[in-house]
Image 1 (tube, rainbow, N blue to C red):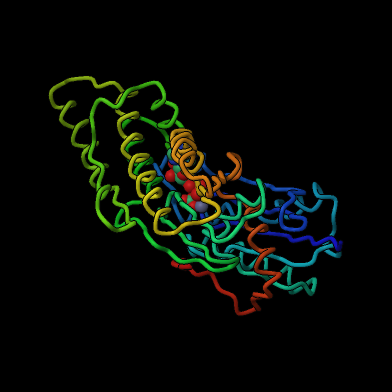
Image 2: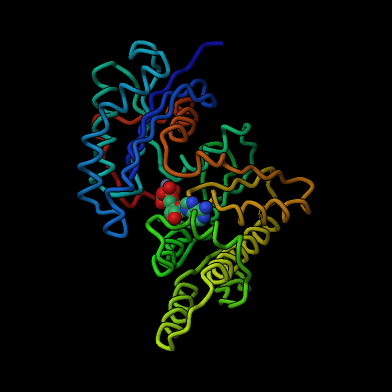
Length: 335
Ligand code: KG4
Ligand code: ZN
């Protein structure tokens, strides 16, 4: 069997990442330079700061990825890159670097949708079997994606306002947690109880859409009201109540979608897929489905990284979905 090596790039938000992926499913290297510390004092990602960090980091990320994988440019078969969605200035750094490497070394260029990348993080667990359904939950997106065959993506439901991760980060700030707050809220949630019974928006309607802004408002109203009365609420119970509301809606909708879309696999991916409460709940729910297997993206590959881009890039490479020198960043790219 011929050895396929893809050099992949990810720079859509606040991680600069370059990876070398063998045959679409084996990580030879996956360098992730995070900028989180630089953004924390602003309470979120500052686009200008992100772009500058990407510029500063990208060359050493490429060098580290190649040396850790023990390969040279001549060994590569293709270059894959996230070209959207994300911050335009941030995306441009990865796209420009990828185009430069591809041009200089006469390699095919494979454009990758960041959200397709998240889905293919699950490829490192086992092969994806079609049809499949993906619950994609990140800081910018919350969507249910039906995949009838490799390379085909249909959004069957999505958030009408905030993304799940965005809601975590906003309520986390009120709990005094640094950006990105999801992991710490998740930890607190496991120490508390659902005593507040926050609203589960759109849980019972017929669509597969989500809404998290009402939950966020209910949370903020509750803490604000307590502040005014000088009361102290349990941070653990607040986190547990918030998390239970998020997990209930995500799990209920996904289970309902599985009835309309019988699939071989359900894939959980995106930054919020690292949520232990959500992973546990879907594991339990999927026990009732004999013909649908649950594929959880590996914990370490839920957040943004280039390995997932290389895995998706391998699929598009085999489908000969190539880009050229005109490839541009597309901040609002959709499937
Ligand atoms: O996919 P990602 O790394 O970046 C985007 O493409 O948006 O997702 C980041 C989001 C952040 O909002 C972060 O708070 C959230 O994922 N997150 C979590 C957990 N770990 C990260 N949310 C809930 N529970 C977690 N354990
Ligand atoms: Zn992401």
